[in-house]
Every structure is written in C-alpha cells, then in structure tokens.
Image (tube, rainbow over all chains, first blue to last red):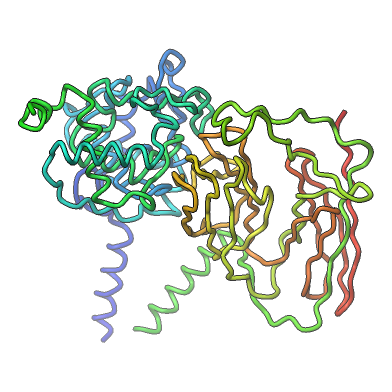
Length: 254
Length: 241
C-alpha cells in the first residue's frame, strides 16, 4: 500500500511538473525557447511587452495584435473565447492576407509551438480561462448557382450590408466609424477584392461569420444563421471574387 | 492514501481560492435590514446635445435624446448603480435571466446590476442590424459580440464567470451604450426615475455603500444596518461645469 502511494505521488508530481506534451499543431511548446523565437521574429511589430507596440507598429495598419487581453480575431472557437493552439498555429503559419503579418511557414512547427507558449505568457487570461470547444462545421454542400442565389438572400436577411454594403464593397452605412477594442479605426472587409483575410477555403469563410472576430465589430451570427444558410452565404461570398477556382467551374460558366 | 490525496487536493484548492480573493458566502438571512435612499443631482444638469444619428435615419430618426443625465422629481437621478462593496455573506444570488433590449436604436435599460451565475437575454425590437458587444470596462476585452440581424431576434448568453463592470456597445450604431454591473453578491439596485433605490435583506453590520454614475463617477458612504430596520443613505452628485 505504501509503495503504491509513493508510485502514485510520483505520478501526480510528474503530471504537475511536466508541461503538456504536444497534442496537435501549436500545442505543448516551451515558453523559454519561445521567447528567443519571439525576439528574433515577432518583437519588431508586436513589441517587447507583447502590447502590439513594437518599433514598426506606428507605421502599420492593421495594427499588430496586442496580446495582453487574450483577444484574438481568427479562431475556431465561439465568440469571446480564447483560440485553440491550432488556431494560433494557423494564423502564424499562414499569415494574414492584406496585412503586415507574413506567413511563418518557414520557421517550422517546433518554433511556432514554442512561440505560442511564450505569447500566452503576456495575458493572465490563459491561466484563468481556457478555449471553448471549436465549432462544428458540417461538410460543404456542392457549390451551385442556386446556392449562390440563396446565399445572397441570407446576406440580405442578415443585414450584412449594414457594414459590408449592398454590393459587399465594405461601404455600408455603418462602415465609417468602426473601431476595434483598442480604439483603432477598422473597416469592414471588401468581399469582392479577391482573397479573404482569414483564409480562402469554404470553412475559413464559414468560421468567420459563425464565430465572429473578437476585438472587432464583426459579431457572431451563430444564433441567427443556420448551417445550411451559412454554406449558401459562403458560396455567395466566393461568387463575388474572380480569384476562386470555383468561379471558373461549371457554375460560373452558366 | 485516498485521504492523503484528498487533503492535499483541498489544500491546493483552498490556496487557489484565497489567491483569487474571498468568495461570497451564502447564508440564511432572516430579519435582514434595508439600505435605501435617494441619489440626487445638485444644481442644473449639464446641457447635453441630442445624439445625432449618422445611419439608419429612416428608422432611428435624425436625433435621439442623450440619456447621460436623467433627472426626475426633486433632482432625483436615474441610472445610478448603488451597491454594498465587498459584502462577504448574505442571501443567495438571483437566478432570473436579465434582459438587454435593442429598441429604437438604443439599449434598454441603460444601467442595470446582475449577479454572477445569471444569464442575459439580448433581444432586438428593431428591423435593422444591431450587434451587442459587451466589453470589460477596464481592459476593453471583448466578452462576446452577437449579431441581432432582424426584428424580434433574441439570444440568451451567460454573463462572465467573474464579476466585472461591463460596457456594452453596438458597433453598427456607435452612439448606443449600456452598462451592466456584475457582482458576486445580490446586494445592488439601480436608481429609478426619481433617484430612489432600495437594497433588501441585508445582514446586520456596517457596510460601504457605493453609488456609481456613468459620467460623474463613484461616491461612497458608510451605513450600519440593524436587524429588520431600514437605514437611509442619500447621495448627491455635482456635475462638473
């Protein structure tokens, strides 16, 4: 019995001491190593204190993320939640189209994992809170003209035009006085310009209006748009851009 | 073995709790006292120009009265949150769902109190898109941001797990503002149109009573509550010229 308890305490001690080992992309990194990565690649924009006020920040729009609040735009998790490690890894790996955030594919998964662990030290929220489960995205139905048309109806019913405008040019009536959580001016995305900031796949676009973009005016439509409607809306948004391969397909040809 | 582990665990838990701060303790309150009073605005309320609406004027109109200073009978000031600061024990928190309505391009109510564990129903009466975007007033951190795209839409969400002062905005209509005080206890009230407030079932003892107004800030007073009796605590706010 005594031996058993010693073994058990050893296990408990180990479980408490060892950092969680990698569960997936971005998880289980070492913040000490991550600090070195951060200082090499991230500090000039995101700042020594992780406050988004690095040397170059003044000259940049969209402003670099301030890590101190634990607020992140691109997530697979519901509105208000922290992102998952995989979400952070995706942002760092792919970069953010149209902003100064480049792709960090080249630094490799290990460095990204470590820098994610370090970024989390800037906000106490990572100690007291944890990400809610990722939303479930159902399989994409086929892209079709009918789906695009239904998607336009969802766009109208959901009043997306209030910010994004009738023609999705980012020029709706509320477009001009929007601010982010830090008080910086922010504009609704022009959905016709080609690439979408958060990624171009159907599920990337689906995720944006279901989860919303924390820290920005973009709210979550999870309670007002059904999954079927959401896919139609994705197809409508894709139909606005000539860059989507889908737009060269049969549906576009008709 | 099991005992040792559970003792160790509860010790760990206790240390976590004490690090966070003493939690509110629910006790049976019989024959509690009442803290009541009036909050007044001294002198003339500052003239605040009406809100000029900049979008959806066809529905919202061109201007809306600015509700920063709502003064009623004898200078009574509406929308002041009055609460017992740091009260450690007393009756259980309410469990009813609170409501925040988007109506006529404004939030209603402007100011309200709530307790941890309550939920909030966010609803819209307006045939235009609103979004309800509560933020922590100190850090600006987004709590969540919910689209209310059409008339009659509503959604019920939990309040944050820890008490905080919540500032609510609608990004689509930047003039809209609401305040939700969230406490870990049930001892608070929002002043009515005549500036009255009443906080009931308070266990006897001496408390710090705080009155908070969105523009004029905070004032506090001490009140000693005796069993079964009301104690009157009045506040007056003098607006800056």
